[in-house]
Length: 223
Ligand code: DC
Image 1 (cartoon, helix red, strand yellow):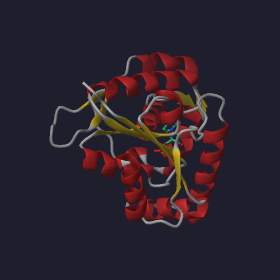
Image 2: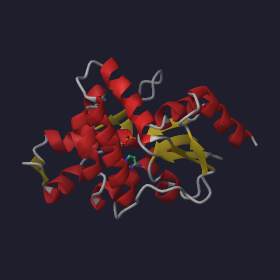
Image 3: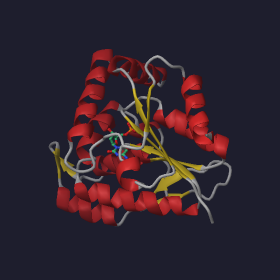
Image 4: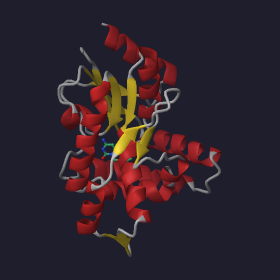
């Protein structure tokens, strides 16, 4: 079976997930949100006594993680990704998890485990996968690659509006700091740092609406 892989990488809150989801719908591909996977395993670590006084118990975490698995739900209406058979929602989008996840995503054994899961989840057919290292590490031979960037204040404002709408009590300065810190940690970590693949199309979403960026992506793919 001929399959297509579209890799969408970029900084936090550049619109990657929304655009990737739309692209997957449009093309009838499966959408895989790898940020979700890093967030879920962070939530798992936090709630399985694998972090003590802010210190990640790496040996215990590695052992526990090896027993876990991401799968697809059997519900054909909404193709949901499950972790150990469970689905996750807003509990993995809190500021606590957004702060912890950069630390968790630096661990080599976490990345190895998740990259293997990402490749295996993609075996079913064509995919749009979004994250930080998709075009560089997970699928260096992806058919199409995008790299999304945007001004950090605009990104923080988007995140702030999202969290406020969900009723979370947050300060704009707190969100901006989280966005800037994550940019730094994501792009300077030793293993699989966030960077643009040479053959990726870079799109700056600062002054474009979702529709305009979506059209740019579709037009790039159809050429
Ligand atoms: O896309 P997101 O903001 O939900 O991702 C959460 C964190 O997960 C992000 O700060 C970095 C990490 N991440 C990663 O290291 N590699 C990926 N492929 C996806 C996410």
